[in-house]
Image (tube, rainbow over all chains, first blue to last red; front, side, top):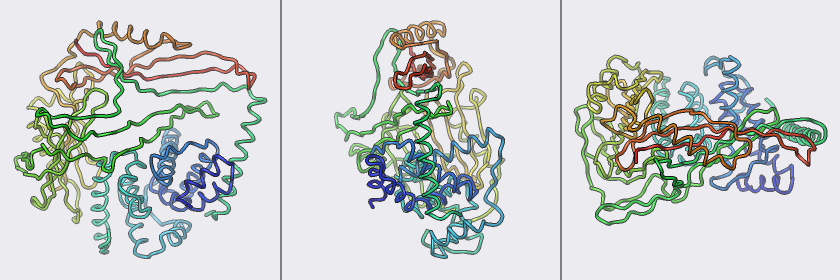
Length: 186
Length: 341
């Protein structure tokens, strides 16, 4: 599978439902983790990831080919999360910050998706960062996107994204040091 | 947490349900479709001139005749969308960036080193690259960026306008390893001092937003007010907890203008004429209103104002396929630039 592009083409043009299922298999876990940085709630992130796939399946938007399929999908998920947050704000709902115990579901997903213990430590430290920092770090260090692709997802200029990554790394280092960790790879 | 199979099944069920509903809707339901369209036109409505501006490639050329590699950029486009609940959805399509380095290009005519003074400290940088900066629809400029490593523990990068040689942006980077809160008073003093050095003592002519909702930086944003309107001339300053300026951005700078340089009533009349010309073939046109007025500096050194005009239209039509009467509703934003000719 070429990161989902051909699967999506099969689904969109030939109506092959297996194509959509392949995309879900490839991207679901990462999207949930990414969306958690917006909504700070695992169950909501899971719902929003599902909404992203449903949007893909019902509206069948056209991938213009300007960026990789994954970048395009993450940008779509981000817009859905922002739309959800706007509606939540209108309804007077206040979202909780990253604090307290991590839900068991998120721990399970962390362990299966991130796998390495030290990377899980880094991911947990990200929970205490500004959401924007956590969002770009997730894309660049966990989804291994280029800064340019992360900029497209987050609707920023490449230069702004570069600056944001720099600051996010610094903030993360400070956070890890505060907690007594040293993580040289970041 | 659901398994992958559960998620896939739920998604495919919802997709099927949606498709079923869509089929039924076509047969049974009376639904008015609401559409909203954001179209950003750049109309140079200069007193009497009616040119359409549609930039998609910018080529820069220096006064000494050396041409610079063209910087290609396609701007973001907006498409219409609709949803079943009558809600408006606007889907932004991302630009297809061309070129290997979207940050800029090498300009062999740029000075190899440059120096700037920020908050009393002089910084000297080595040339990195040049970039085209675009300020909305109304002006573009080329800036050269310079880099200095390890100045008082900070790595410095700054941009100089290629024509005016003025500082357009300054950034200082330093790894953050210490904890501790931002001292707002100290940072505010630094930001105000710097703002005054750029704008003079009359900060009262500017709208100021400041604060520290960030654990590491204090933010200070200044916007020039003209006739009570927020102009495109802004100054963004960011100060870290050490009192060091880590970001300084000057946007669309202009000087010596305290009011719109044209008669507003005359501008209203011109815009009315311009809107009439734009909507002459628009079905169901029902009126327009201003959403914003933004004074801007133009490429030629003049000052104009961008009027964000919302044009409304609405009409009923009979859909042969659905065999129902539907209503088309459109709010379209048109930006009209007004300047003295």
